[in-house]
Length: 375
Image 1 (cartoon, rainbow, N blue to C red):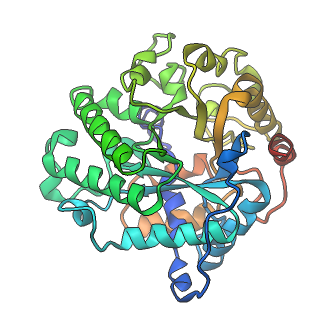
Image 2 (cartoon, helix red, strand yellow):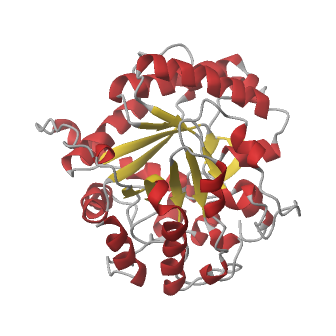
C-alpha cells in the first residue's frame, strides 16, 4: 500500500501469495504419464548450500507456471512451496480430499521433473499483511491461534505434508515475529501450537527439519517505518522457539532499511552465527534493481546484497531462497489481485523488480554472482 508505507514495515508485506500462483494451470499435468521421483542423490546430502527461488513466473499465465521450474533448474537446486492453509478442508482431520493438496502434489511433480527439491512452508498468515490470517472462515475468525478449530486445521495440514512427502525441511509459519509484534497477546498461543505441531511432525517424519522464519529487518529494528526505535536485536523472538527449532531461518529485504546495499553493516548477518551453533538458512529475500518509491535500488545493489549474505553467513546456510528469479509483470499480477478483491495488491510493486533477471530472461549483474556462489 504505497499511500501507507508504515504498513510495509509492520506487516513485511511481500508477494509470497504470488508464489502460490505458480499452481495456475498445473492441472494439465494431471494426465501426465510420468511418475517422477525425487532427485538422487539429494542436494541436501551434498554438504553444500542448496540454492533456490519461489516458483513465481514473470507473467501470470499458463506458460509461465509451467516453464518457471525449468528456468529455476538452471540457477538453483530447490523451490520453496509456501502454501496458505485450506482451513475448511483440514479442520476435521488429516486424510481428506483437498484441492490445495492436489496443487501441492502437482508442484512437487514439476519440481522433481526438473531435478529440483521442494522446501515446504505452511503459511497461516496473509502474504501481503503479516498482521492478519489468510482466508479464515467466519466461524474461525475469533480467538486467533487459541481457537481450537484454527489449531486443529493448522496441525492437520502440516501433518499431511509430513506424511505425504517426509520433506527434509518444513516451515510452520513465515515471518512470525511480525505477527507477534502486532498481536503479543496471541503469540503464546502460536508458540504452544508450534510445539504441538513440531512433536506431531517429528513422530511422523523424524528426519524432517522444522522451523519458522523471522523477518530480519524487524528483528533488528532497522525498518525505516517501524514504530520501534530500539536498535538492539530482538533475540527473544527467535529463542522463544527453542529447543524445538531445528535451524534458524530468516527473511531479509534490506532495501526497506538501507538506501544502498553498501550500507549493510559487516555484522548485520554475522550476528546470527555468533548467537547460535545451529544451521542457518535464508527462507526468502532480495534487493530491488531499481528505485520504487520510497525505496532505492540498482543492479549493483543486488550484487552487494548477495555478497553481504554470502560473506557473513554463507558457509552456515543449509539453503538460500532468493525471492524470484525473474521480475514479474505488475499489471498481470495486480489485475489478478484486484479482480478478486484482494487487498494490498499495490504492495507487490516493491518486489516486482527484485528478480535476478529481467522479465524477458535477460540476466542482471547479480545473476552471475549467484551462479558463482552456487557452482
